[in-house]
Image (tube, rainbow over all chains, first blue to last red; front, side, top):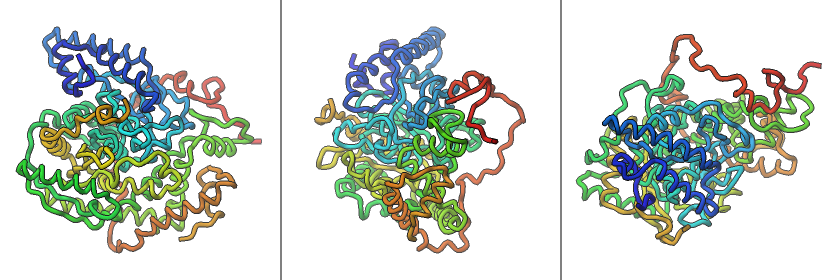
Length: 494
Length: 95
């Protein structure tokens, strides 16, 4: 059986029908990783024995449940790749940073625990921009992940390893985190589907913090159905994360075929300058598709969204400067040799351990929190945030869902933006406002540009509207084949 | 606003970082570019707008005062760069 040709849901169905085992599936993906990852570099850490051992345990539980006539979790036996900023008990978790090069967490992140409770198999840890700061995975301290569609291009970031792994069929599913677009932007660049859930629906316990008021864990899959099932598996209230919502969580997977023909607003702010014509055309084509499916589509404008990008860089950097103060070379991670005293130990360990981009953000955050600049920058950005939240609220009183590009361009060349921090920041143009407002949004394949690189579209919804977003993308994917395309078939990495 | 090398050095000292002298010019220029970009926020009128530090607006989340998670001391210390018995070890702090 060609396991790699199956979607995550199909794999689970075959396991439930005893046509496949978790071990066979895990071995098939480990084989692909060993054959292709020299070219892609999506993974930081894969231990075949660990993954197979887990798969065996999972299969035993599956067998036991099946013999009792019990229903399996929707993704039982399906392997998943994990971005390296989520703690997996006794598995190295580095955040792609030298400062955590040897850190082995003594506990599981709640999202990991939930995935395991749902009988999923942890395949390994995927590459990322150091501490999730970046839009290309070029800021990893360890390796450069390549875009499977064109290995001279970046996979996007910061969850570039997770997106590339799913695109290259090295994993049917992966987890990423999204602070300003870190799931949606790499999903777009790699031609896969990625969901950034409502802030507070997936516990952040065990996710190494970047900007705590913006960070959110979410799923990658080839299609919306896989994302829905993985989102169901990881979400829920967790008393270890006091920002996680205590409420009834419905199953998004069970609602996946319940297409509600939502009223869609094309967000004009993300259809202007800086967005390529190919991408604008893909949005227009998607509009026509949704109209043919019976949706009303109108244009809508939220002028305050132009404030989101500067506000995002101020707020996320401020929070990062505070969160990253814990890395000091004392309790874990990298410690500089030969420090004279404790202050020197802090300064040397941090200066040698952090990469340039991380230092830049810590510096920017420290600056904007400084007395004298606090009101002018940090407080001003918090007020801009209020305006962005209000802007979205007004828009959702008129439409159910917003449609726009996920990114202003398709994947750019490796090295193209590394010397220009500002131009890298603009890659997040279409995604950051969603985090500022804590909303859910999904990035999904909507075509290819003239050089054959995937184009990502984005749907943004009001709080807790994940099921609506996922079923709306599912309806599009029932009518199109973009999400089924493979880099190998298009002349990308074999 | 203009950013000076002295400011960059001062901010670095607050953040317990050291910027190499040879990188200082480039770093200063980049900081200035980013802060100029952030200055674009000053074009908006935020009179009477309340700041949003957190979109949920939640306040204190209370729980019983118990210690449900117990980590193994050995396992926690296994990540320590240096340790003495069951303590983290650092260079001498007091002369």
